[in-house]
Image (cartoon, rainbow, N blue to C red):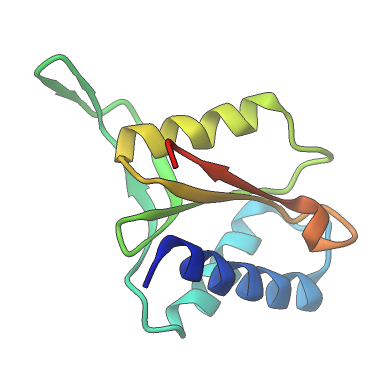
Length: 125
């Protein structure tokens, strides 16, 4: 499955979760529900995947964790904030670069319409 096809699956799953729960919950609640929905798809889904930082020849475990990774090539960063800002975008871009992934979605569930809370983020596409 391509990154774009995965993106469609993620959007549909996020829409379902948001329609059922609405805004106002903690990020962890949305993450669990989205993970549950994505597991139904048959794709390889990893939640809270550790992401090491490789500096020169040294692998450093510095506490980075990807909220959800799909098929080892697509990243989802989940938020439940008043508004997405530059630091959220920088976070997912860093995760994309460190993992050598090309595409991810930054999803803020704390919005009235989920389409207004989703940002598609690319790394060297």
